Amino acid sequence: MRSFLILNGPNLNLLGTRQPEVYGHTTLADIETMCRSHADVIGVSVDFAQSNHEGVMIDTLHAARGAKDGVILNAGAYTHTSIAIMDAIRSIELPVVELHLSNIHARESYRHTSYVAPVAVGQICGFGPRGYVLAMDALLGHLEAVG
Ligand code: CA2
Figure (cartoon, rainbow, N blue to C red):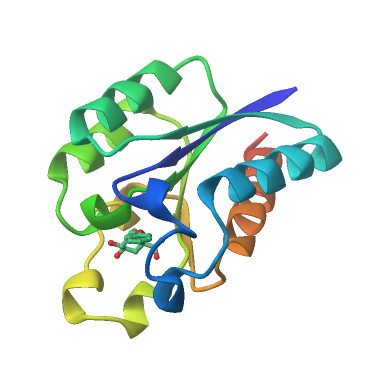
């Protein structure tokens, strides 16, 4: 069975509790439940994690090397700033799908740059919580295509 890490970055623990006009009413726990039930449908296992700390996220990515088949990463605002996370993704030699709830390209210009994008197999953004399920299908499809 293929094994995915779904890693969420800073402030995403607040989903559903603040700024619902931007990020909606769905909590991160709701998203985890959605991912786990989709994992059962498509026959993969998932680890679901969140951290507000760049170094912890990097440690979690390092631990995925050799232990997971791929990563779905919503790096939050670190997407737009973190060369360290970009380097970590490169170092783990795993396919990473970049994910955002919002359409980062339709928001402020400082969100248009992604340090994750150049080292990801692809990016899904703008579809809200359903993007996680789309990302799981995309990652599995990618793994099946590359063998
Ligand atoms: O759209 C996304 O998923 C983002 O990764 C979310 C990040 C943002 O910095 C990225 O540009 C796009 C922010 C997550 C903050 O989540 C909050 C949720 C509720 C209340 C406050 C923040």
